[in-house]
Length: 147
Length: 147
DNA sequence: CTTGACCTTCCCATGATGGGAAGCCCTATT
DNA sequence: AATAGGGCTTCCCATCATGGGAAGGTCAAG
Image (cartoon, rainbow over all chains, first blue to last red; front, top):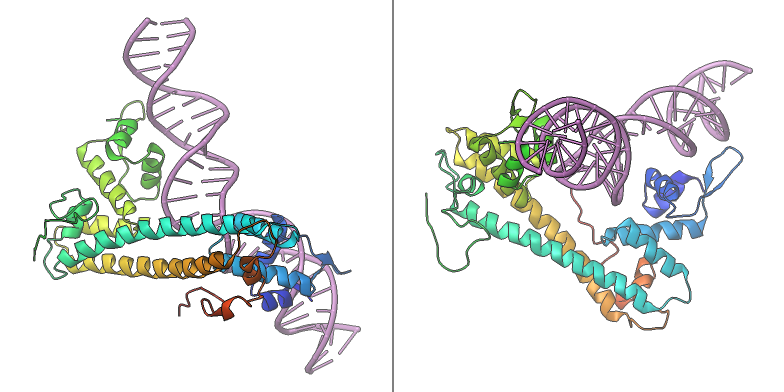
């Protein structure tokens, strides 16, 4: 199997397969006489593993750890679970961060007329004129209506 | 005000202030005889605007748009609202994507013993052996399809 | 006049991926 | 056989926003 076929079979682009080899994530592929990389089912399986880990948001570094654990038949499942748990925590942190942005922005957008007139609470907030609800949408009072 | 003071006053690192100038996000600062950049309140205000926009997750490109709208006294608030609304949609898309990952991972982590034994549903999933709970959580790919 | 804290520009690195050029190799069609 | 095409190789560059650090100029205080 050439790199193109391995790419199709694994869903990983040829560019990335070469890159993963370069950074040592996968072991260098064997070469044919014409210097083409050649792959077998085992290699494609590894590439699909990486693809799946990436699609779950694991970094290449985490993916490498998981890959090694996968290949280590005497691993302890707790080691895998630790990696996953840490990643979940990181995802949740980032989700919360973005949800905070959405909350603030939704509030500001709600307060913005979105019409032909120039006055805009969104710009006011960005400019620091937090007469609207600067710094994280004050939960209690300040239901300011402006149009 | 030198760049260091402007940095402290705005919360934007000196490195980033120079970079913003380089890419044309802010107008080049005036220079003193010794070639030092010099800043006034207006410039610091702009930097704080950028800082705030960045903290709400706007890209530098979006920030530039917002900055121009801010400085355009005859803007229509709808233009601002459009930028914000698009950004909210993008954030929500990314949040949903990450929540999908968390959902899958939480399920897998829940199923994983996390003990000294090697068998691990997390690795099984990554390896494609989705004998774990009949792949109801993630039908092979928590990626969001865009078209 | 030295020391240290600024400032300047310039280059490099990150993470993960894509784009593209130059050149070699193989196969199929003329 | 010659040529066209597609696939492979390596190498360099770009992204996005930020930081690190070197080499050297400048200024104020001791």
